[in-house]
Image 1 (cartoon, helix red, strand yellow):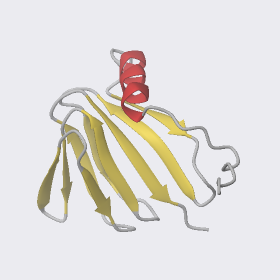
Image 2 (tube, rainbow, N blue to C red):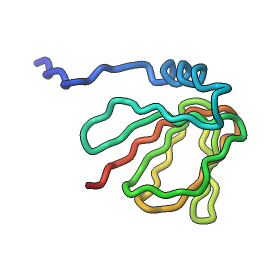
Image 3 (tube, rainbow, N blue to C red):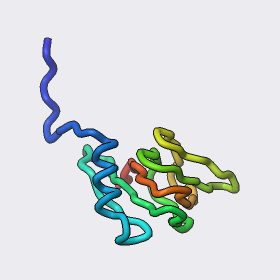
Image 4 (cartoon, rainbow, N blue to C red):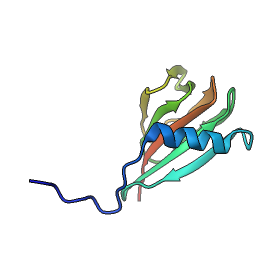
Length: 116
């Protein structure tokens, strides 16, 4: 039995979308954000970070996942360093400080649970 279509859902090629975003963002800034469609309660976006670009230490209210779609990045949190290569994903709990350094030009897929 076929399932009902999901309202406002259009699948897309994540790698291709990240490549297109990287081409658009390259040379414009050290980092750039592009919001993607996501269901209620989540915020999903691409984060482009040029090679050796840096996102300073910060924290967010809800838990997040960070997935390397393109490139390689290092995430430092609580005195530990995590290497994210293509296809790697890490979960970071709510309110945990972390920073990001791109080893190479990178596009990260960030999904954040929103807190009301």
